[in-house]
Length: 470
Ligand SMILES: *Cc1c(COP(=O)(O)O)cnc(C)c1O
Image 1: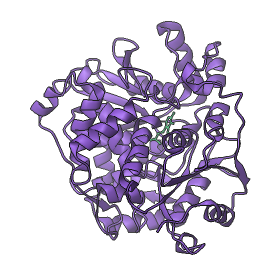
Image 2: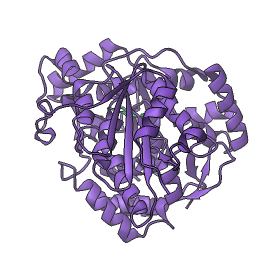
Image 3: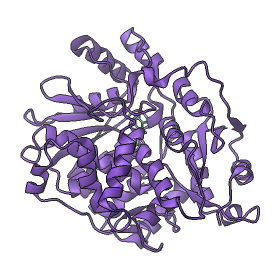
């Protein structure tokens, strides 16, 4: 499988190349040259497969040429062996129509583990036996950071620098990053918002001067969902849930608490591969750039408002570019122009084909803080089920969208409620206990550097502490 850049001028790469690169050299994102797909009969045959087997069937199409099926199976077994639930991503019924897909049974309590436990092992697999060294630079609104750090701590040939917006992640989120003591892990608390931190990371990718400091060269890579391998791993659970609810003979709708548009884009990929999806509901909080873009065609950034669902406090959704590229006829050069315009003016209008294409599969909703809290207390009182704030936004968006009664709706449960205990306690009156697997998180000592929201300060810190690659 070959991967091409959404901005049309970077060299196509194979799966290994795209995974190690993260971002394309022209600033675009890698996507498969064509969407692989299954027939209805092939999908029907996957019903009842264990999660790892299903993952192998689906991902084999994307890694072809870079990994054998046996290698892929071995990496998946090790990645999903770290999950604390035998079903990996169990599906729970909430009422007649609604279900939640629990994606939070990995080591750091959010869905990011599903992809990052695999990505950490992919990096190691591709680098072992080479003399290369990878410097991973990432920005996190909370959950990517802890999941990525858990996935690469102590691994050979990889350093990780994780930027988080200072004071804007929950205590549990911060401690899950800053209490990991491994020489290859570097936590940076940056003044500003997640979008500021993400912009610095993107700039570092194109910063030749920084990459060439200290005599060596850094190979910078990404663990954010700009890395294609993450989205690939997330396609699997759309199939897993839909198969349990009767796919391919019955359509299923999904509601996805959305930030960077990665998770819901994986649903779009599942649909391109032949999974019959009735609708993908993009659920946002008051940071609603995606809701505005999908409902009016106006993709323009506002200021970020901190909320109780911090992993969705985003006003620039990197992966939206992948969708616009696909819907706009896969024209890389015009995409590059559209994105240049956006980067200058912080605003762009979707073309007619982009708008109409999106409207045929996506719906969207913006959920206010009160509605989120009410969804949490309703689910707790009526179903004995505790939703975290992100999942509550997805669930409320699912209820508001009005999907036809015979169509099951699955809300992706992106975080464990214990990760956001204060917000859950405010809404439901009960404080969810931390699961045993997080151990003595609040007794461990933290370590992180505090840096100003200044690109040069952050870039020099990384250059000083990273290991050059040969
Ligand atoms: C990252 C995250 C999201 C947003 O996912 P995207 O792929 O960025 O759209 C939603 N909820 C939680 C809990 C997250 O960690």
